[in-house]
Picture 1 (cartoon, one colour):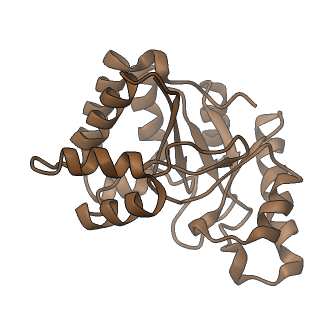
Picture 2 (cartoon, rainbow, N blue to C red):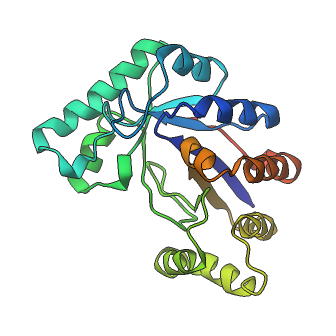
Length: 231
């Protein structure tokens, strides 16, 4: 059996389009939103509030989308705390979850993050059993190619590697995610599957049709396995 969670990073303007698609299929997710992002425009306060009031979870992503291993150590906690307070002042409730910008971290950053948040999400790939506090994703909703999936499966999940090799002849990335969910749901063990992405990336690569199809698949065959962050 499987449990499925979703999250989306960066607070890009396309998050509102993503929100409408999630609402279409009643799929819960968490949106990790910084106050600022030098790479692209971010959601305004009204849009952030709209996401929260829709029932989706809002999570922190630092204040300025800072790569925390690349700034002065004394500024790390400020980035974490200011990003959290920025969102809490908008949505009027505690922000419990955090995502590491760029996936950059070390043990000190993890420890500081857990002083403020219940969970910390990384950008690791092909992880099937994330720990309770550290959320290591399984799939990125973006096809990085068979070799990348093979490499990360070898590194992080023998079970995923087994499924990948078993289904390699007719490999299609998004179909493979579906196959994985179907096959794991038939096993007696319990598996956590976390799927993440960026709305700006979906827009850039024109993956909206694939995402619509995937969310339809989830809502049809695995809706009972989807759950929001609840810690």
